[in-house]
Length: 322
Ligand code: 5GP
Ligand code: MN
Image (cartoon, rainbow, N blue to C red; front, side, top):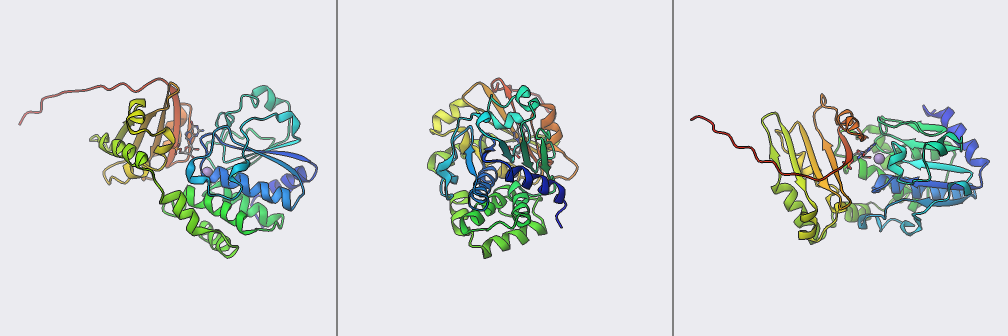
C-alpha cells in the first residue's frame, strides 16, 4: 500500500469528476517536469478519456525534443476553461511563471493537485502530493499509475524514466534509492527507450555549449573554506553564441572538485536577473535553506534562486609575508 493512499484516492476522485484538465510544468523545464507532464497526459487521455492541455511557460530544451509528444506543449493558459489543474515538479507558484495563477486565483478554491518532491514545496494546491523522499516527480507518478492501474505503454515508460535519469543525474546523485532502481527496472520491462534518453539527455552537446562550459570551468575560484564559485555574464553568452539553457548540467563538474563544500554558479539571464545554482556533496550543508533565504528553493543538495541585478567583478589584492 502506498504511503499516499489517501491522497491518491482524492486525486482519483478529482480526476474522475473533471473533463478538461490542465497540466502545468515548471519554467525553464527539465526532464522531470516534462516527463511527468507527458506521462500523466497519456494516462489521463487513454485510461480516463479526459481532455488534457499540457503547458509550460518556457520552450523545451533541445535535449528533450526526442521525447514522444514533446510538441504538444502550449505556453498560454486560460485556467478558467479547466475544471482541474495539476502541477508537476513545481515547488511554488513562481516556478510556474503564469501570471494568471496568483494569490487571488489560489484563494478562489479551484481544484489544484500539486505533485512534487521538493522539500521547499509551498503546498499551494488544494491537494498536495509532495514526497521529499522521492528522487523525482515521475517516481510519485509511477506509484500513482500503479494505484489507478494505468497502462504503461512504451512512450509512458520513456517519459517516466527520463524524469528518473534527469533528477538522479543518471543514478549518480545521493537521491538515488532502491526505489529508483526498482522503478527503472519495471520501466525498462515496459519498453522505455533508455538508449535514446542517454544519447539525447547526456551525450549530445553543441560546440557553443562546450565553449560556454569552458568559460564556466576556467572562471571557477575556490576559497580556503571550500566554497567554489564560478560566473557567466551576458557577454559570455554572446561570445560563445549560447544561451542560459546551455548551462544545464555544468554545475556537476564544479561540484566534483574534492575540496569543495559548496559550489555556486552565478549567471546573468539576458533579462536583468542573476540566477544562482548551488550544489553540495556534504551531508551537513543544506543548500535549499541557503537559497530559500534568497527567495529560491530546491533540495538539500541541489537548489537555486533568481534575483534582479547583474554580476560585478571585484578584485582583492593582499600581501602574504614569505
Ligand atoms: P538548478 O540549479 O538546476 O536550476 O536547480 C536545482 C534545484 O533547485 C531544482 O530542483 C530546481 O527546481 C530548484 N530551484 C532552482 N531555482 C529555484 C528558484 O528560484 N525557486 C525555487 N523554489 N526552486 C528553485
Ligand atoms: Mn524534479
